[in-house]
Length: 390
Figure (cartoon, rainbow, N blue to C red):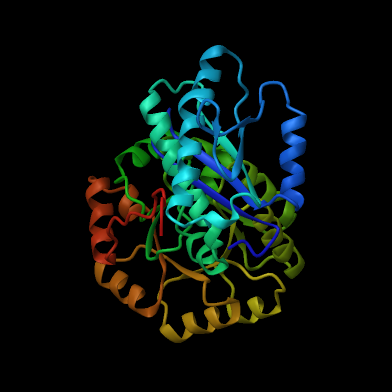
């Protein structure tokens, strides 16, 4: 039952290049959606001509459904994909949704549907175009009628899912612990070798050290991402002044996490954190030489996402920081730790262990990193998937 003017549904199904992405709205004819339906139908745009969904020629589906192509139709081949398998698939999905009771049969004359259909110009397999668009449309209708997703689902999934077509994977540090490998030297050839030798694991984070950034600039973050697109990159800016400017520079250079000094003036730190969040990066406070990090953090209106401590760490200190910053704040512990110290740090509440030369100067970089991963209990987790249903 549609209690509001209209409901919205979305679904992504299939594989490239025939992958189907459906956005749709279903609502009352006498409401705003009915007006949009009539307006779109009466005022077609070149390359995006709306068409009625038909089960077969001369038999439009009920509720009346308008298909709007997302991709500009430039030639006959593009048109055939829309007017053939995609149009049939959408119509069949609507009809089946009525038959299954997802859409009430008593309401079909009162409702209209507008479906925005993506068909890739390189798609060739009509069978796949049909099946993927059928499945996506049917799922999108079900989700629209159920009001999916609820806000609780969005909040839960936002930090552990990603779009399949984004072109790279986003690891947002939502499932600690993590091993951060710090690149402390300023020789790119050595850096490149380390990056290629490290295991391809989601649990490994790359920290671009200050010497490396000072020599090559913040653009080194982009170079690291080209070699390891799946890895979080921390830019150790050690910012003491011009907080918003340096945060913006690092963010523009694709840094996922940007580090500033806890010794900077409070206003500089706050502007740094604000700017980092604007560009979608996490703000990382380096507390080296800071006698009382908690005292400084309490004075900040904007709190850091990650707080780095040096040397040993006790559980009480970790709790104080998380109570001050918020429970989602991550604690990074930096140093050249042996295996027993790593175990103690994780037990005390450290979320990220930052290791430098112990790994990067090892004769077996891959083996050294794997040993730390194993000691920290980091195993491969499938955080990255298309959710076709919940």
